[in-house]
Length: 229
Image (cartoon, rainbow, N blue to C red; front, top):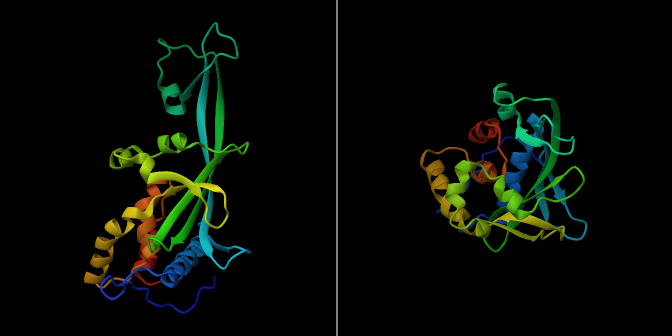
């Protein structure tokens, strides 16, 4: 996908457009990727050799550190894993540390944004794996959802985050179901039109759904979208 060097305003009017079409999706992705390249955020556009469809994607590596604490009188194989902050806060009178080591867990996250012809909205596909290539299970992904979002999803988390086959790659991915995308995006679209502000659908949509699965956008995306960059 090629991006134009000439600045242009990307707009999407709910009253003038019947749906968020695939061409509009690709244009908004192109502008999003253009800013990503500018700040080095890692988003890119990929196409398949077997079909003309494409998707936007990013790979993110997260490193989690824990403090491994050994109790006096226990063997080296019997240890307690505590978060780094909790291990450092334990008072010496109540807990004697005889041996410590940093336990590191490396998790690779893959985020893919595709267009759904059925719902006529973008869809977020994602998966995660540890350093040995073992994929994280759905329950592990759900445990990783931030607490502030769990309350919103608790009525049906398995209906909101499901596992499906990637429509282009044919591999298992987790998916944030798009059935309610229009419902929460319509007010955003109408507000942008009301104040006559430049609008990038992908930026606003990812800002809302991304944090649910650990994907946070830098604020510069919103500034770039509002300025038409």
